[in-house]
Amino acid sequence: MKITLKVWRQKNNAAKGQFETYKLDHVSEDMSFLEMFDVLNEQLINEGKEPVVFDHDCREGICGMCSMYINGRPHGPKNAVTTCQLHMRSFKDGDIIVVEPWRAAAFPVLKDLSVDRSSFDRIMSAGGFVSVNTGNAQDANNLPIGKEIADEAFSSAACIGCGACVAACKNASAMLFVSAKVSQLALLPQGQPEARKRVLAMVNQMDAEGFGACTNTGACSAECPKEISLSNIARMNREYLSAGIIAE
Image (cartoon, rainbow, N blue to C red; front, side, top):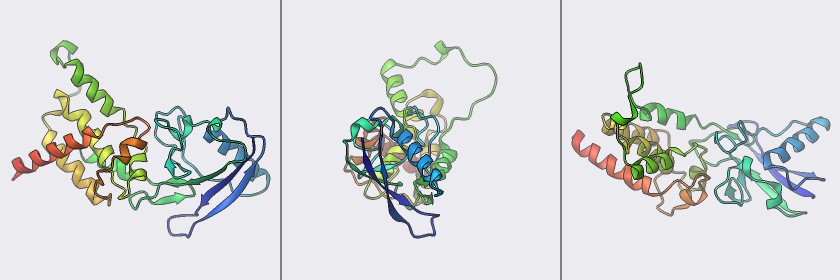
């Protein structure tokens, strides 16, 4: 199949970016979207041009690195998949595909399609952990956890921190990401001792990073490759309100 790519090129966050058009022939429908970009970069290198910079790592939908805005949607036209899990059979011969980086003040462009998402790391460092004594693990039966709660915590923990929720939100809000990380610990007994401190620290850090307020449209959950539930945001709001009242 033949496709035309309109790719955002930008040297750094201070430089002015622009779209550049590339044409690819003989694209296999069985290629992943990132494999197609590998082919593009090989073509550019052979032509003596600079390859397109984009993030990737595991290419298995686990790491959350493959952040691309494809034809107006984070990770592309398919639901519940990351960019690396998107295949070229999702497009048609002759299609024009527009590819951009995440657009958010808290995700400054490093180069081309690569953005700096270290703001997520700083949010996690603020409180996305539990403090425990090192040594032998406790016997599992010492911490009985109901299956429904365990399943809900696991579903929240499935968030890979890709930033699609931020890219999908009109306000570039990180509420879904932060609430998922708060919820996975707030639901479990291991997370209870630091629960109030955690939610205050993580939400305050989120605000300090410059993420916008929640729009309440649900676009974040709709575009999330792991289908993280909006109920996490409601839980985080309750946790935050309760922690704020007790702190006063």
